[in-house]
Image (tube, rainbow, N blue to C red; front, top):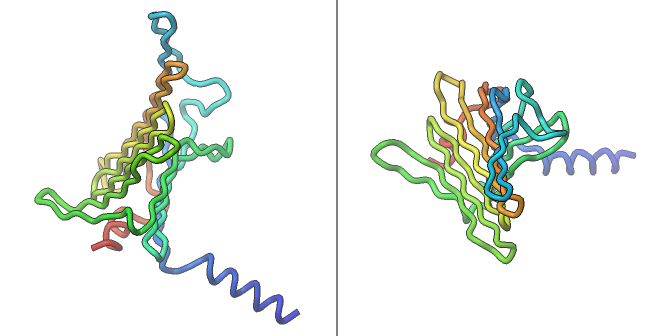
Length: 185
């Protein structure tokens, strides 16, 4: 029995670390529109059936692991659905100092699945995009007051031509972007 308890603590010790840095936003959907194209005719809808609705919350998370890998995702927790995510290992993360501030960037080039991703974090902006096959996702957040952000999520699919655009008003619920940036200074 003692052996089992020791094993459990060893396992938890390797998966939960005080060195992990997290930043989280809870975002209220303030607007959304879906634009479709069929035989040259445009149709605009107010959302996607069976998906989140205006007024509901989406959650954005950035997590840095002790080995400097970075994970980010935008999620609809109510429906347990990830809208877009991003992962980069330490070899794909760079910290750039420029005249207008400091920026953390991470990127993954096109691979065999025709997939690529890019993440950029600065003191007042967070932006990431992902391409997978013939679809594109982008998420952008801009700090407008202390720990309050406004955000836009867009999804484009060229197979069944449509674009989903979502406006969000976000509040920081854990951590800060400044702690994420400080990790790489």
